[in-house]
Image: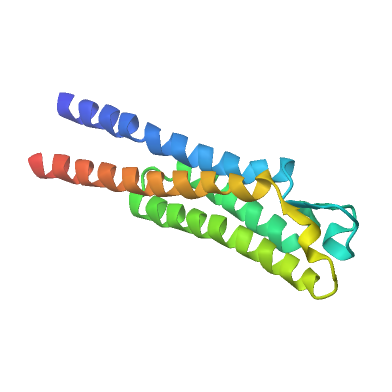
Length: 157
């Protein structure tokens, strides 16, 4: 009886670090709504009409950002299913990689209609995406370590 109680407490304890990593990953996605991806010195039709390029300028970017944030948060509560939690961590990393790629492709498409494309400057929003990538990878690694630890504890029983 005592060993089961110790094992359950140990399972709860070892889940904290990846929960924090997944929460930080989600906050990196949410931070996209409060930062700019790029700015322009003069108005450019469509995405940079207001001289600021944000995630909210494209439904695709909003969708990727929301999916990344929600999947990160959902993965926190799936601690009983570690293989699924690992897969969701990889999915979060993929969303974080695709987000700047899609943003770049949208700006690149704007370039064809604008002669002075060099007047577009990148902003902090592009670099914040390092946070979900880094913490998604860390959570994947720590979930794997916990899975090995729990499996080794099962073998000892």
